[in-house]
Length: 451
Length: 108
Image (cartoon, rainbow over all chains, first blue to last red; front, side, top):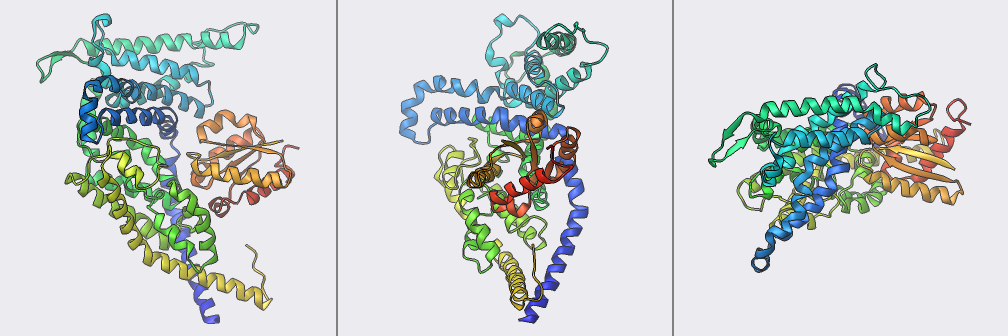
């Protein structure tokens, strides 16, 4: 018994020492990335302002393109009508993102958020419309740039708006009102100068770009706009992001962040979401892009970040009291892909034994899935859902109703179960030894261990 | 009535903890309301609360959250990761009570 206790002790110190090393060298750079204020504002904007619209809009896309051929034939005449709610929600995501980025950033800056939000939307519209007679312009000409193709412009304008308005507030260049004027009126006047300035700036920039018209591959005359220009500049990046090395980089970064206890999906979303959504929007209109948001949330993070579903099952039957306790709490949330109980309870965070599979398992799954989608074995994800949709159902829905999507998820689950097992067993042994040591000490009545 | 703000990332898992905290508080007849917010929403709302708690998955923001809370005299603390993991509302409520009772940190 005492030998086991000693073994448990030396293991424990080794584990503590290595997690200290991680804490010292891994946490600061990852933490710095995660606490960047612009990334946080972009993240919030996506989650709070655009996600509900994207998800709701996606559903109309599925109805317009139903997976069952008989239904498809029946709905064919109504397809354009069914697509209208999709085009005006999902299709306008950049417009709402401009509002969201400006609003969220203002919250972080602790200034009034609605005014910059509204102004950012207006500025984004000005940036997206060619400077000419708008009354005769077909909506279809600009529509793609108000959605998936306009996200970068929307983010830049959102940040610019809030920062400029904040700079003006309280500076010499604002219109001052006597103290007796109600604060709401004062605020409106305060915003007047930065509003005029920004409006003029974006409009003249747009006008400058707009005079450069070009003839595209379809032999039509197009007018350049800021989103078109920026999209052309960033097109190579979008292509690069939709590749296996990029997917690998993103999943490794997500899991390294989670390994030190930082919400990895959250941080990577802030950087990658514009690209994911551009690709997803292209998929909705017949593209074949693989690296999108559902590629990670629905097909890699089974039961929560790190594909920890199988661990919950292992824990429920564990001989370690700690793991059994965590397993019971973790079961319900796991069904809805929430795994903080696992991450902080096992724990995975700063645990040198569990960190290995915590990175390795999702990397393996991403590799398998990338190959499967590249080989066209499963329909490409086209629909975005809340990440809380349970395993099985979510794979079917994400692929627009391809049952092979669910099968792939269960295959990945089996891979995860297999790879986690030896590491789980090793960690379980450590915990059992630790628990045994604690009880012997208590039983011996010499040292009382208090947590 | 004590108003608690929990700063977290998406509010999904925190809502489970909130539920457990409210049950624990009710059992001990301790009146409180709890709100789970992102760091940005927290910055906009911090004035309205009595206590600020930080969820473990955003501990990298701890310093900036603590600075803001301290600048307007609000007590602030991290939630123990294991309490968070096991959704132990009872322990978190006790932590809040302790935080408010500690002189120099609480407002009363």
